[in-house]
Image (tube, rainbow, N blue to C red; front, side, top):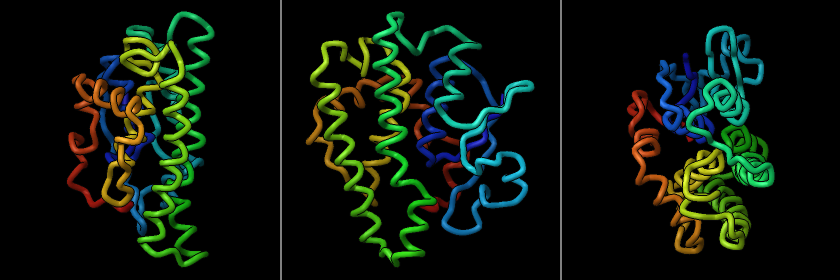
Length: 221
């Protein structure tokens, strides 16, 4: 099994967590994300993955892009330990939380959006930081309400064992704490509590960007 990704990519981070929770061994293939001369901009990578994004998981004949699709694949091919609850309503809630993070919080702050803001609107570094903080705060305000106001929330996003939702939550929070964004987690006590509970687990801790083999490579965003 090979995982094409980048240590600072939140989408790759999600998959690393799922792989760790599933106790899967894999080969890490770095695909750097930089403002210029990024690996995912190269023609050969576009041929490999026409979506020109990361992560990509290669497992035997399967080649899967998009973090949620990869994690669903792992769920189906390696059922234990489960990352989704047994009840259909609870599974739907977990997917809803994960999709909210994946589709509403993360996309405005990804590299291609940052590049466009700078190229088309001449956004300064300060403006880009303000932009990123805005979308994090807007998303976390909603996420906090979804978590704090639901009796299904336990030690983790859903109950007392990690699920797909936690695989998505931790990278989003981690990214928001970078100095370039500087979110204040005290505004969202439930999110902070779940984040801390996750990082207390070795599977989450060893999935952190600074614990990856490509961490010393330059970070472009």
